[in-house]
Length: 171
Length: 165
Image (cartoon, rainbow over all chains, first blue to last red; front, side):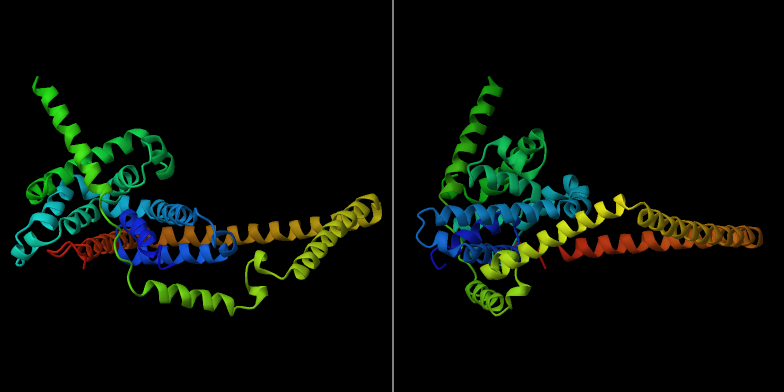
C-alpha cells in the first residue's frame, strides 16, 4: 500500500479536484484491493489494477454529481469562470513573492484543480491517462464534441494563466 | 498565413503542455490515508459473516443457502402448478382476490368523493385565499432555492491561494 498510495491518491485528486473526496476514493480503492489480495499480492500488474479502479471510482463520483455541478456551477460558468480562475491563480497575493518562488509543479496542479469539473476531467483523462477523445466521451457519458470543446477550453485557460506565471520555467 | 502561424503556435503549446503534465510527479497522499484504510479493514474483518457480502460467507453456508433458495423456488413453482390444476382451490383464491380488489376500489371511490367535496366547498368559500396561499408558498420555495444557491456559491468562493473555503 505504501508503494501505491501516492499514485492512487493523485489519480483521484486530479480527476475529482477535491482532497476529501480523493481520500475517500483512495480508501475505497484499497479496500477493493484488499478483497482481491490473493490475486494482487504477487501480480506485476497490481499498480495498473489500482490505477484503473481509482480512475473508475473517480469517474463514477463525477458522473454521480454531474447534475449538481451543472445546476450550481455550469449555469454561471461561462461568464464567471475565467474571472474566477484568473483570481485564483494570478490575483495579487499578499505572499506574491513567495508564490513566485513556489514550485512550478504546485502552480500547475493548482491551476488544474481550479478548472471547472467537466473541463478538468476531460483534460486529465487525455493528458494523464492517455485516453482518446472517444474513450473519454464514453467514460464521461457525454458527446464527442463536448469532450473536444472542454479539452480545448481547459488548455486555453491553462495557457492564459500558466503562460505568464511559468514563462521563466520554460512554457 | 496568420492562421497557419496560430495553428502551429497552438500545436506547440499543446505539445509543451502534454510534456509538462506528464512530467508531474505524484502528489503525496495524506498521512491519514493508511490509518483510515487499516481501520476500515479491521472494522470489516470484525463484522460477522452474515452481515458481509455473499462472497465472504463460509463455503458450507454458501452451499446450504443455495440449496435452500433452490428448494424454496421449486416449492413455489410446484405449489403454484398444483393450485392451477385444482379447480376448487383456484376458484377460492380467485374469489378472495376479487373481494380484496372490490373492497380497495370502494375505499378509493369513497376517499375520492370526500376529497372532491372538500375541494369544491373550499374553493367556493375561499377561492382567492387559496390562490394567495399557493402563491405565497411558491414564493417561499423559490426564495429558499435562491438562498441555497447563493450560500452554496459563497461557500465555494476560493481564497487567494486557490483553496475553497
